[in-house]
Amino acid sequence: MAIEKKGAAELLDELGITRPDEIDVEAIAAYCGAYVVYAPLGSADARIVGSGTKAVITINSNAIPSRQRFSIGHELGHWMWDRGKMAFSCSAELQDGRWSGTDKEARANRFASELLMPSAMFKERASKRDATLETVSDLANQFQSSLTATAIRFVEHGSFPCMAVLHSPSGREWFFGSKEVDGKLWPHKQLDEYSFAHDLLRGKIKGPRTTGLVDADTWINHPRASHYELFESSVLISSDRALTLLWWKNEKMIADLIGDHY
Image (cartoon, rainbow, N blue to C red; front, side, top):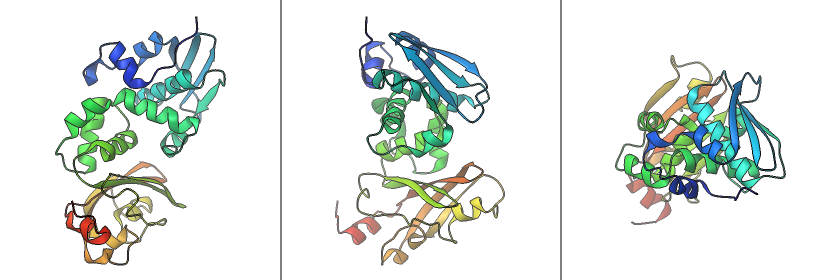
């Protein structure tokens, strides 16, 4: 019997899951005919091999637990939607870098996000909370999810205007804005030397994380951005990648710069 393609929300509803601590990704994968094993994988974080109604998901035993859980969700997304095109091998860089678009990797990431951080559960726990990486870290712990995936989920479902941006030394890899700024304000492609993320990537700041107010033109490509400030939270997620959450604490900036009075 063929396994029916289902979305993450449909699966959770079918299994009667209503709380984050009930999201047992290994059990959910097994319910879908995909069985999880752990082994060292070198440069890959996960791979899946499947045929017919059965698959084996191999997870890097050296990865941290939150990355392992997301990788299971990601590979399960492949199993639910990309059967007939197996097998796949996915690295952490591939998962962290593919969030937009309609390709199979972006689709698998979205499946994993909805599986690990269901919209209704996430919105309830993110409501009215400050748009900082401290908040994101707390939510990541509650949902046992990766910091990158949780930051994107927070941008989608938090209460305040904010933006998540990922940079490497070569420049901006992606960004996601909340509904207030998406398609209206854009971050620079290259990191400004006055940003905290710039200093983190170059080892000028001790520790992996820093926060504070910066001039908005440090981040935002707009001729009048220098008149305003943003709250920047940045963290190193690897030796050469910095994740940043930008928060418009003063929402007047958005109204002034894009003329959207709300």
